[in-house]
Amino acid sequence: MITIKDIARAAGVSHTTVSRALNGNPLIKPDTRERIVRIAAEMNYVPNYSAKNLVTQKSNTIGLFFSSIDQGTSSSFLMDALKGIRQALDESYLLTVNGIDDVLHLDRVHPRRYDGILVMSQTEHDNAFIYHVKASGIPLVVLNRQLDDPSIPNVAADDRGGGRAAADHAYELGHRQIGIIEGRPGFKSSAERRLGFMESLIAHGLTPNPAHFVQGDYSIESGYAAMIQLLEAPERPSAVFCCNDDMAIGAMNACFDRGISVPEELSLIGFDDMVFARYANPPLTTIRKSVLEIGREGTKLLLERMEHPQLAPVHRHLGSELVVRRSAAAPRQPAGEI
Image 1 (cartoon, rainbow, N blue to C red):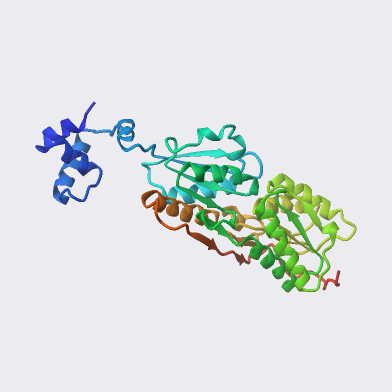
Image 2 (cartoon, rainbow, N blue to C red):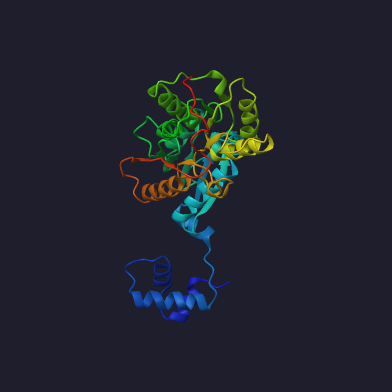
């Protein structure tokens, strides 16, 4: 196995100079660094990260923890989160992915195992884990859920504003019978999107119809089942807000199977603007909450805190916006007030 001493002999420098050059030390002249890097590549040098980690006391591992992998985390949400994180995280770091509900022993989450931790949080049940990480001294950023604690770095979007914008759009199109397929019970995003939706109905003078509020769990299957329930309601809504795009796709398929044309007979609005939303048939009108951007910005913030632990905690609240496509339109006939 080639070592830095072999490279030092070939380059005619000390092994300390080689080590500094390969680690990007600014004290090494650029031409010397380039020559050493070239020689290392020619000799097929492979760094011994285990030995390096023993010296630096770092694991080169970032932990990504979701509230749950199995419950409420759709494949599209997971994919966008990982894409965003990897855009900001270079290949020198190993990224591990776990569910907080799978962590049986908190004492196994410690600074020797993780250089930093990202928590893609959906529920306040995650707080025990979050405060354990904080108390352990591991650099931490909480993503996706807005926190009330200013001492914990946080990156999240405006779920309530997005829910409000979805209902506002349906009302502006002329709908008065507006239903909702809710997200997973206990998840903060579900509660916030529902609250925004309710605020819009009340602001427009509409009385919420309990029969038009159907529970989902963020999965495509739950969107399908919830839409069947809405289609069988005594008074069918003319527009439905689905609290994520996966459920909207399930709802769209339920309409197709029941012979209901979207948007001619029923309008659909999703949430998240996942990559497949624009390729649905018809393309899905939705609320853009960029999980990818949350992941990317949160990772940048984590790396900053790992490098400079003394930095004051930062809270970044990213916006949400309506993306108009073709799954929502004016109702065929003006709908009466609820």
